[in-house]
Amino acid sequence: MTGGLFALSDARLQALSAAVQALCHMPYISCPFFTEDEVQQMRKDVSTLPFRDAQSVVGNGVHQDFQVCFPAPRIASLDAVASLLEKGLNQIGQKNDIFESDIVLNDCAVQRYHAQSRGIGIHKDGLRYRNIVIIITLSGTSTLYGCTTREGAGRQVIDDSPGQLVLLAAPGFKGLVSAADRPLHGVDNVTDGRLSIGLRSEQLK
Image (tube, rainbow, N blue to C red; front, side, top):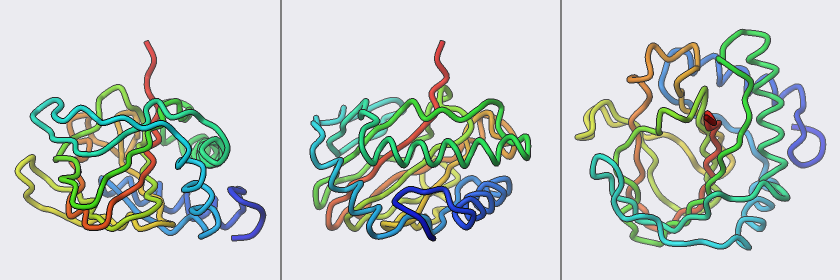
């Protein structure tokens, strides 16, 4: 990929478009997307953010064993990557009529897991998150996975190693049959910590 950090090159737009089209046929997709310099810059910028312990158990008994910065401010590289993805996804969406509305990544969370953390249990992202959910892992050794039941059946590992862009279908995305089909996923095997960014479009009332 050519250009400066977080530039929307033609090659990058094509990679993003291919990932979105693939998402029409599966609940989640991972593709190589970020350079080492971009990952390093994001890691540096999020390291200065304030973190707090996440609520240990949330709806449906889902455990959460990490620290979180939420809402994380759209500053520095966080704003650059969000702007890049908004621009690319909206070009794709307008061309293919694939999202119910323009993508505005107004919900940003940074999660920091310690080594040997329990991770986060199997869950679905809330109905208020529309069109697409984005996960960017910056460091650590852990397992992000999708599955077909809350008991973990049909488990499939999702490659979220640093440099990968992970997309999950959300309500409003034309490839998702119904809101009830939004993907179940979780994180475990946190053997060497984990640092990740989540970007979402929250439907504001």
